Image 1 (cartoon, rainbow, N blue to C red):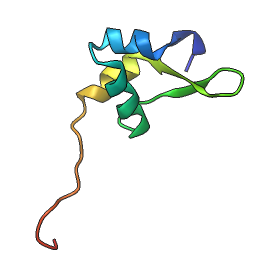
Image 2: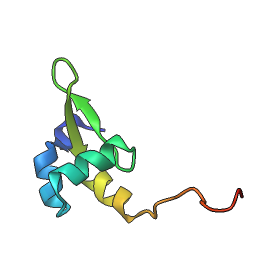
Image 3: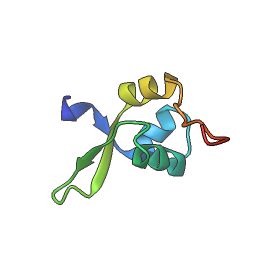
Length: 68
């Protein structure tokens, strides 16, 4: 991954037409890839092509129900 291709959360959210909070929530859940950035690695950066590809994949959910 070329770090020049990484963008801020605000830019990524705009590119995929998603709210900023939703983007962060999906990243925290591991649904979309994100990368630590900055001197203390507390910032978050995204690759727009990777985010778009991840959003195309179906979400796997664990079965719920009757003790199955």
